[in-house]
Amino acid sequence: MNDAPDAAARTGPLRHTVVIDLTQHLAGPFATQILGDLGARVIKIEPPEGDSTRVIGPHFADGDSAYYLSVNRNKESVCINLKTDAGRDALLALVGSADAVIENFRPGTMEKLSIGADVLRAVNPNLVVTSLTGFGLDGPYRDRPAFDMIVQALGGGMSLTGEIGGRPVRSGLPIGDLCAGMNAAIATLAGLLRAAQDGVGSRVDVAMLDTQVSLLSYVASYYLSSGQVPGLQGRQHMSIPTYRAFTCGDGKDIVVTANTPRMWVGLCHALEVTDLLADPRFTTSEDRRVHATDLAAALEPAALRLASTELLARLAEQGVPSAPINGVDATLADPHVRARGMVVEQRRGTDPVHAVGDPLKISDPRAAHVVPPRLGQDTEEVLRTLGGLGAARVRTLAAEGAIGPARPDRRTPRDTSQDTEHGTPARSA
Image (tube, rainbow, N blue to C red; front, side):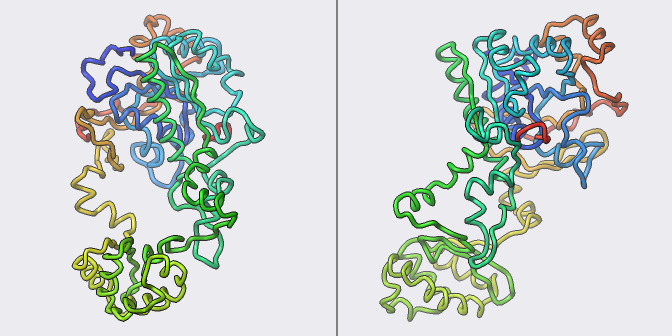
């Protein structure tokens, strides 16, 4: 792998890895942020107008949107106009010193810009080139634009999400984007390992729709085995009727996952419905599944007789896993979430930047996370130190409009003294 000039000063298992990030919006930046969290030097290449998410409202800090700030930490911003020959050559200079390139343009766009995978790998044969698109690099849907809800709908997940008897709804979390981003990071890591062991680069093709179909998991197996099309799952599990949500007497909802015979007994004691233990309709887990409607009719009124805090306490005493259904506010205030470092606060200029933390705990961690960069703030330094371009050449590129933001950013330079915390429509994700 290629050591960047400051590799000795960096930490984390990927500290010797350089990633060129040609992504925007959510899926791609999420993938490259994972690699950056693991210590990679991530060079975010932005067009003169910047990543489109920098201006998504309604919340902003230091001039950039909370959306952009959520998935772009641990990166350096280099502003290059890839529609110019000089800008293309500047990118190729960086690629020569990189280990991986991740992009989420629509298929064919890189080739139109004369920076397709073949061109990049001709410059650097050991390179891992990862394309993260809506539908993949081939197939009949290849050229369609795709966003999170599109693949949630096409991938079958929306048909399972919603109250039974209601209408399908999208997941409240953008799983189409985020899960594809995770897969892109995983596949890129596999490519990096292959390059390190065998000295051979890789071409990686990750599609958002493929990812969504893979998430059907056992639900797909149920259909493929039986021919029965599953529908909306509501607040319960299609195989385990005591794996479900309950509404309590105070109007609050909780979830219970009574998956074993012992937990079934504990649930009946907590709800004070021990007579159900002698009911032949509910003797075994299969009996309870077959008579799920009758079981719900017996359990739901019992839950309504108790406040959520009381029922949760009883379930805990019985050793039955349960939890309140937290809002985002309660989750981010949860003492365990805080103890695990899953809420971080940094500063960029005078503005606080709050975000979720790094979920990957590893024995060789990145020592400190760096706040997301301002547009183009690292252009000159990266082109000189990583691309090997002289100061005069960098000035010429800027004068020609091949590098640099569309409008000068006159804000103060990023303050790193407190960095102590561990697709647009033209694109497909």
